[in-house]
Length: 109
Image (cartoon, rainbow, N blue to C red):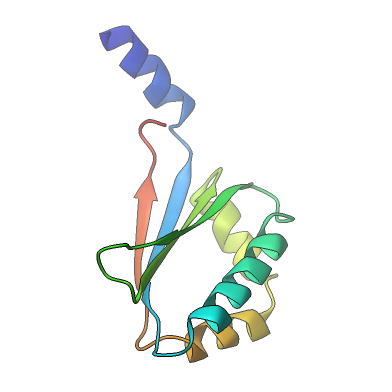
């Protein structure tokens, strides 16, 4: 079992996640989800992209999370310069406040 952990950890040593926790403004859920879906399509084309997941908090209906997974933090930073700023504006306009952002390193899948 210990060997499996070492193998799993080594395989994901470089994977990087950026997690956004967002609170949507009243009446803006459709706008937020539309903008996030459009962003996910663009992000999929970026070098170093691994996944883009949108989650809805069932215990806090106004809260959504996005988890971006990249091969490295450098890949995410490089891609951020190529993403359309208009989509970020649409996302920001649909939120109650600025999102909470966390940078995480994957240890396991």
